Amino acid sequence: MNSTIRASLVAAFAVATTMSAVGQWTGPKPKPTETKEVKYGPITPAKRTDKDMEAFRNYGLGQFIHWGVYAIPGNEWEGVSARGGAAASEWIRSWGGNTVPKDWKNTYDNLYKQFNPKSFDAKAWAKQAKAMGAKYMIFTTKHHDGFALWPTKFSDYNITKSPYKRDIVKEVVDAYTAEGIDVYLYFSVLEWNNPNYMGKAPKTDEEKAQFGKFLTYTKNQLMELLDNYPAVKGFWFDGTWDQSWIQSYEFTYQLEKDLRAKHPGLIIGSRFRNDEHGKRHFDSNGKILGDYEQGWERKLPGSFEWLDGNDWDAVMTIPPNGWGYMKDWSGLYTKTSNDLLDMLMQSVSMNGNFVLNFGPDGQGMMHPGEDKLAKEIGDWMRVNSEAVYGVRHADLPSSKLGYYTQKGDVLYLTVFNRPVNNSIRIAVPKKATMAPIDAMLLKTKGALTVRHADIGLDLDKNTYYDIELPTDFQSTEPFVLKMKLGQPQSKSDKLMDAKM
Ligand code: FHN
Image 1 (cartoon, rainbow, N blue to C red):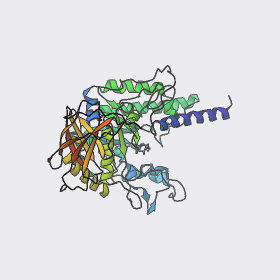
Image 2 (image 1 turned 180 degrees about the vertical axis):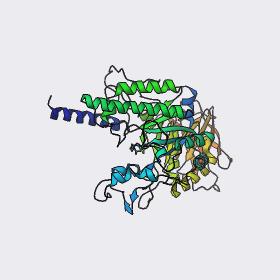
Image 3 (image 1 turned 90 degrees about the vertical axis):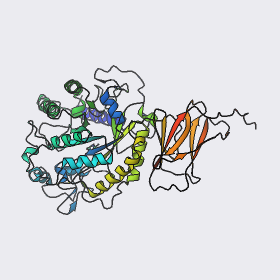
Image 4 (image 1 turned 30 degrees about the horizontal axis):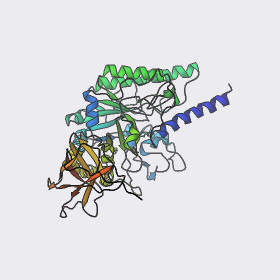
């Protein structure tokens, strides 16, 4: 086969792989039309029931922190914005176009020599996350630029070569663990400036030997992270979309087995690897590869059914995009606390976790906008977190007023849209054996009356329960109704069908 045809087939394969991946986050997952033999499929059961995975299911709210040398420029350099020149603030090394500073990549690759975050205080970060209500935190050990925030023995491009010198990953893991917040390590597989990395699948013996060195380096660093920081609960892998990694499926399959053997209970998301047919996140038979679906990045599922019962988390930026520090937020829509609470409740209502990203600056300080949101969210969580932690999807017709979450025989409705008539209407299928029997406002602990409203709409499968809100209860933020479920107090009359 000539090289042109081969190149176009490889390109088509890459597009097909990408397209099928995108398809699973823009609608219900495409169901495989045939069963394929898959040798490099899932290693763990789709729904683990061990304590670590149960803890993951109960987190509700998490924090992501993207930190590294990209925090020094903060998406600009010597007064010139990288906006429009780099895909995102943590991608500033790839700044292109007519605004890119002269000799930029060399400048960037020497930034580590000035990385000395004098205001960095991991304990302060952890206390802020605790006050916000985060139950887990994902921390960038190494992003695509390859700069390691821990004293790795396998690369000289690491924190010990910076003026700061000290082990930032250890400080973060220790501080968050001390606050009772579980830590997950973000690890980018791809490394832009690693001489042994390549995006394309290695073909020649020389390329295979070279990329083989990179795979060994990757395994060494991952084992080192588990040796150094045994308190961590999992990995959040990234940068696994290149053909070089996709076609190393035998290696990645074995690597996942080795990591799990070394660290029992380890949690690994679906972005880590793919099967031998190039299917990422889910194998060719639609089975999840990893312990939770890790594709909801700056996007949320349109309905519970899209998830096929898998565990998942959604990671979200405050600006439209940009995970690393961005000094200038002007001209961008930055999400409000109500926006983020809406996304949080949408996530937990569908059995997911919501992870909010923070990008500290080069001195180790959070952006003032992040401090403000952390406080606002924390103030809300202090009153309403029982509707967030340890809840599950409620099998009810979705409400136009907000999001249901459920914990045993307790039903929560977090209201974002207060009805003009002040009456909260809960739709319950007529065949349901449980219905709201009493209610209270979580914020005031005030008891509310539940009235059965059998509207008698022909062909309607639901009956209704109305809960009047006190007219003197006013709120400029979402509020939670807490309801007790029990045997319906009154039955729905069987009415003669309409005749016409
Ligand atoms: O390329 C990265 C990006 O920089 C960021 O780290 C996000 C959030 O995890 N992940 C990739 C983009 O999908």
